[in-house]
Length: 180
Image 1 (cartoon, helix red, strand yellow):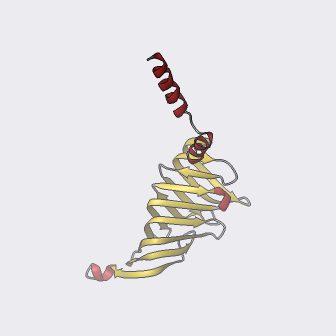
Image 2 (cartoon, one colour; image 1 turned 45 degrees about the horizontal axis):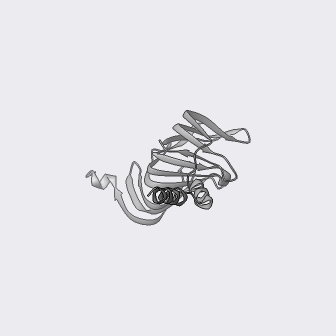
Image 3 (cartoon, helix red, strand yellow; image 1 turned 90 degrees about the horizontal axis):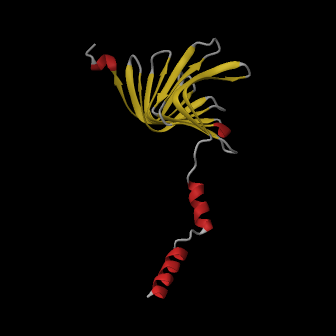
């Protein structure tokens, strides 16, 4: 009987051993931030010219060859013109700054407002910092003082003053809707 218990214990011990390759694969899947910052308020500039101001409750930085910053609690970005006036504002519930590619991706309740009061609502937006443009490939709604435009996809300059809906679905003229 003692021999049977010893054999069972040895079998259990050896069957629970972890394969080093399996452990390594699990470790590769889970990635933790290298740095975590709270109540972030930072100015981004190029060649001495401030381009935008980013505010976020939480920024998680991931270092490495393909570094990025993740803002899981939302973001508020003010985009400036050459005179340091706010030309547009972008907010979303989630954003990721893919630093190495000079792209920022915003998701979940994305709102962009330009200085004319035009408002873009969408669920997904890419801001290409190299091309100074924003784009989307999902449903977009743009509300201006005169009309509401809807469609699939959008391309615009980064201050949202010159935009185009790629596949328009409809236009609602607000003057007609109000009976004016």
